[in-house]
Length: 121
Ligand code: HEC
Image 1 (cartoon, rainbow, N blue to C red):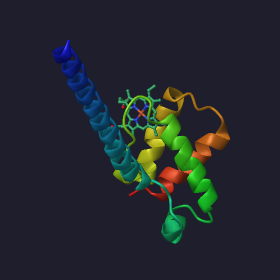
Image 2 (image 1 turned 60 degrees about the horizontal axis):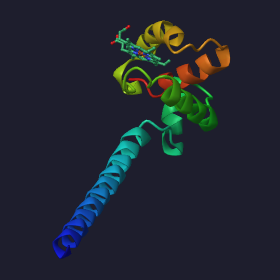
Image 3 (image 1 turned 30 degrees about the vertical axis):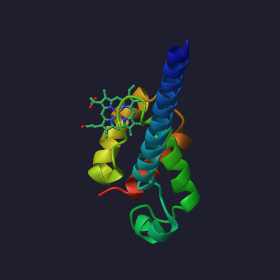
Image 4 (image 1 turned 180 degrees about the horizontal axis):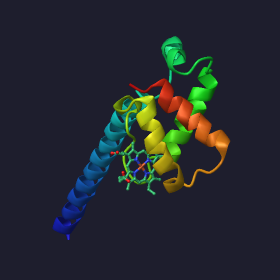
């Protein structure tokens, strides 16, 4: 009887330890994931650089475009960095990808396009 109790105590500690490990792993993954994504987030200090590519664009519009891009364009593959392509190359990609992502309204298209152009290479 005594032995059995000890065993279940060990099992409890072991399981709890695994749980803790899992929680720590999830936290680390979360932090790393956020750090990677946040590089793509448009920021105030890059606004003038982005306006060289998309004149008069506002930070609000770019953030909206970024959010749409993140939610609509990450379902089938990882997000491509906007810097992978020139604005013209993005237009070609988007022609193909808007239908895939089922984006039909001009407002959403224009938000995503402005965001990608503003941070394009
Ligand atoms: C329904 C799935 C799906 C969605 C949603 C989707 N894509 Fe894609 N995307 C693909 C597939 C499949 C490929 C690779 C084959 C191809 O080029 O058609 C691809 C390739 C790409 C490429 C690389 C093209 C190249 O020439 O290598 C880019 C850039 C891209 N997608 C951007 C986007 C953007 C931006 C969105 C959101 C508007 C988006 N994708 C949404 C399926 C999707």
